[in-house]
Length: 219
Ligand code: GDP
Image (cartoon, rainbow, N blue to C red; front, side):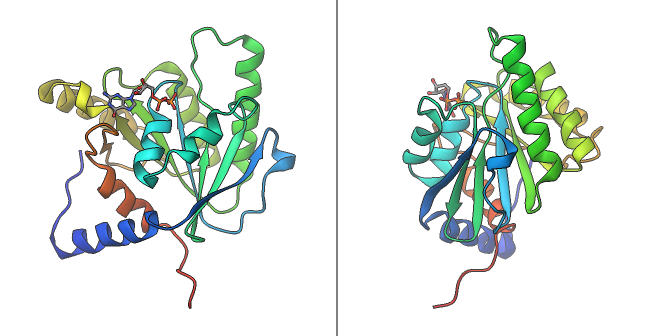
């Protein structure tokens, strides 16, 4: 679990606040890699099992519900959705996976799309792997981590719904998940602990992501 502080921590929170206060516009949806927008900004992707709380987390980070609404529009739920934040960072919402009743065909389609995107994407600086604080890592998450290792995409574990777990359970789960992440070459060592409901960890994650953004435009 991460804890930050001091003047450097404050500066990071401020950078995050400024970036995430900027405009956030939907720029493109891509159901196959031939339709990906040009990678003109550093890119951060969000992935997780269906119902992990991805829409809620992205809404909490950006302070807007429009983003997740776009991603949940019929026809857009199975594609990669791209949003530009403050002209400095692209946020990419990956389709959810691990849905219990997903057909084999749908799983193969998801895997092919995501693998192609992750393998060839210039500018993809980090993927946030969302993990439900009540459940920890599951096999579909492990399959994604293998793809991330192979594609050498740096990824960060982000626990969601932290408000739903008792403190002792939460710290045991963090320890377990961080132990497993440590076995992955591409994993960022510390786990972000968040709750879209209480706001826990949101400012700090904004600060982390702001450190990956491009420079602010002059004037
Ligand atoms: P997605 O399918 O991954 O986009 O998940 P959603 O954001 O739609 O959330 C799935 C369910 O979890 C919804 O019922 C949300 O209200 C709930 N949820 C999401 N984030 C939180 C959270 O931080 N705390 C709690 N208690 N519930 C949450």
